Image (cartoon, protein in one colour):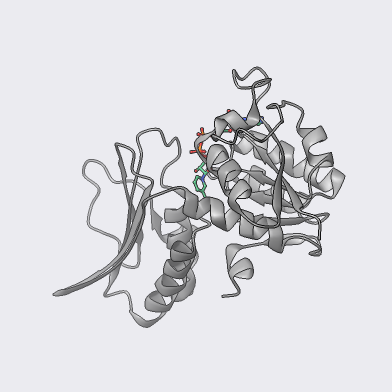
Length: 268
Ligand code: NAD
């Protein structure tokens, strides 16, 4: 069977480079090409050189439409505005799309969902197997423990991350809310500063740390009087996300249009 040709938009980003390496290292896949934001310094340069892949004879492009046309699937770990543009291109060309971008607003989420009516899209705030298992466990534990247990979600990422709380932290909060059968946005406490008053019973709190080159640490803390249960995942390398993204790109081949999650890909 021919290799599945996978394109990478945002190919010179932290995740973009990892995605190129992971496609090259995965049997049955080939790099279809990569794009960067028009005007970016990487455009026109050697694509393979970004990832130490000297035998890849392609240049970094800035024409996303051409990349979608040349790909069997595209991986998008960029910024929300670019992701919305890429989702529209996916719908127009019928090319399945894997979206890892976080920090989207409600309008951007709606635009992605609209595109997914016409093409298969897999979207996940975190593509590691371990974090998806953590979300499942969080939902189960939240379903068992009542509101005597305060739920706090603590995350730490590298100093360059631009959105907070992380998309993964919010996904874990939503898993906890689903376990308790409550509306996440009605109970989320996303920031505390100054005289905040006492903790609201049933609230799901977030705490955000930024520093160094931390790839991504997440803990869900269930704190009651006299006992505390903590579930923690620590990512040591971005390759865990890239492997999940490539796995999803293969899984999307031949799928009906729709918005899928990592749970679908992993068969949880
Ligand atoms: P980054 O800033 O290193 O990379 C983003 C890249 O996208 C940059 O190179 C930027 O120039 C490029 N870009 C911006 N606009 C573009 C456009 N119009 N066309 C093509 N490229 C464009 O960031 P990063 O650390 O790689 O993270 C990217 C996103 O992925 C963030 O939202 C992050 O939270 C998310 N992320 C998700 C997962 C996951 O598993 N879902 C894992 C890690 C990171």
